[in-house]
Amino acid sequence: MTQPADRRPEGPADAEFLFALFASVHGPPLVGLAPALRDLLLRQGFAGQRMTYRARYPGACFDVVERAGTAIGRIVTDRGSDALTLVDIALLPARRGRGVGTRLLGETMEAARAAGLPLRLSVSTDNARAQRLYARLGFTTLRADDLQIELVWVPPGAARP
Image (cartoon, rainbow, N blue to C red):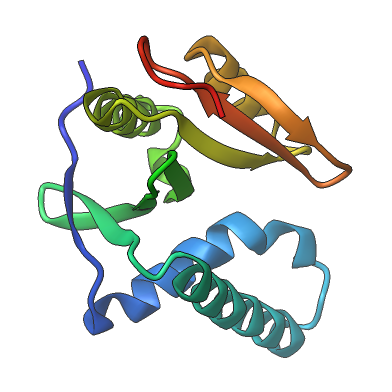
């Protein structure tokens, strides 16, 4: 059985961990670049993501996910009037595939159910592993383009968006 993970609000002291987590997700396609250029692009992407999320979701919960006091990931959720949105979820590579993400999604689905709201999220079209997980959990496609697929899970009794 997967050990529970704890959540706590992000703080200024988490900046380097959050950058390392971002780099673990977005860095692999840049592996052939010169290290200085790769670092610059990752830092710009990280700053851009942070600013975009905070501007688009000003009331969101930005949480660090921990296990036994050690940061292993992050989850960002935003409760709107018509849906709960899973803005971002990411785990360090060594923690992926061990049930932690599924547990976090389950907790988020339960929060949506309790609020009587659908749960929305977007996934990259090239992230087949995450797409399989979301399909297994009952998410369905709202719309898709060449880069992203927007998915929704609707708990019993909630209105479909």
